[in-house]
Amino acid sequence: MIQHIKSVHPFPARMAPSIVWERLPESNRVLRILDPMAGSGTTLVVARSKGHVAYGIDRDPLAVTIARSWCSNVDEDRLMSKARDILERAKVTIKTLTSKTAYPFGADEETKRFITYWFDLRNRKQLTSLSRHISLSHDDILKNFLWTGFSRMIITKKVGVSLAMDISHSRPHRVYDKAPVAAFDIFTNAVEKVVRSNPFGDSNNKLPEAIISCGDSRCIGYDTNFFDLVITSPPYLNAIDYLRGHKLSLVWMKNGVSSIRRLRATNIGSEIKSNVPDEDHIVNAMAMAGEVSKLTEQQKGFLVRYVLDMDSVCSEIARVLKPSGTAIFVIGDSTIRGAFIRNSKVIENLSEHHGLILAVKEERTLPESRRYLPPPSNKIAGKQLQSRMRKEVILTMKKVS
Image (cartoon, rainbow, N blue to C red; front, top):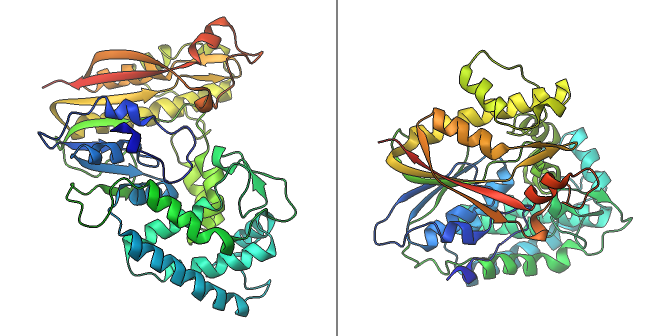
């Protein structure tokens, strides 16, 4: 039942599990299913629940960690014993820390400044102690669960171990002088919440394992004609900056601020300009995008970059799909300073260029909680935008056999 799919970690604009559940067949025939922009793993956990082999790719290291813990078998007693052991060890380690040493091993000066800004000394010491002992774990599955629980203490809406609010919506702003809670007080509870939300139970679960890796949907590292089905939710043109919030967790996991910055700059949807190449299908996709004439030259450059990135994604999806395979795109159309941009038409056009033929086009009303773009009542939204921004588009594309 779809009711057992509960998230293990906050994640902005998560794809609704019901979309995947309703479009996947039962496990009378085991399929290879790919989400090349997997995020926290909604497609993967639903596919595995239905008995299929799920493959996921994402560039965000925290998303990969969350997805792995959501999709893995878990021995609750063993994991909670490990969490309690780490907490006790951390309580010993903290006695050796000072304000100058309360940082992750190997942190550079820029990363230390970032941590000092967002975390008070009490939690810097406690998070340093916990993170060092989690890093020493030799069991990768347990480590993913422990890191996900660790991150749950940070990625919150209001009450967490940082000095910020609204991190779970990827809009962190510093509001506290002292964090509302101490990491040591909630660590084991945070890990337990991850375990209780995992749908797969103990290590004796016989469902096919999910295979989740850090990678890029613009260059999918699998063989041609490998997958039966792809289901994914591409980023909006003016995409949520997931890493803006995730950075507060990632810096504790041996990711420096500079490396996260480089990753952000090369993500799909990043605001980096490109020029229109002399390729007819790219020109056609741009023409299908909607109110392009309302954009500034800089904004048009951002759109070109997005179209080029999604062209690579659509090409790769078409390549790895089996003949007669299906690709399902769950897409939110965008607005840039009042100009309505039809991401869905862009992706439909690009997919058809690469041999994917539209079979079904649906619209789904977005719940209020998922409208992270300017709300339909916003003054900059015209009547058409007010209607369209309440919906997302689901494209079902078939590969030409």
